[in-house]
Image (cartoon, helix red, strand yellow):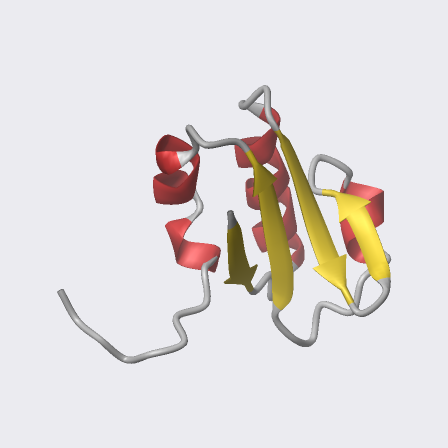
Length: 81
């Protein structure tokens, strides 16, 4: 599963990594030609955080995780509901 996320501050990165670390499955962040482990704070800081990052979740059972990181997910459309 793929989502676009935005990590705007150092605290966003810390909160995101803490959420990812609770789960057993792998999560990668892709930016340009770079891919880093989403559980690695140093890896995340090596990415260009000024724009949205593609998050790739390697699990079919990730709804709780997605709910937890909802504030970081970028919505492409302005739908409500």
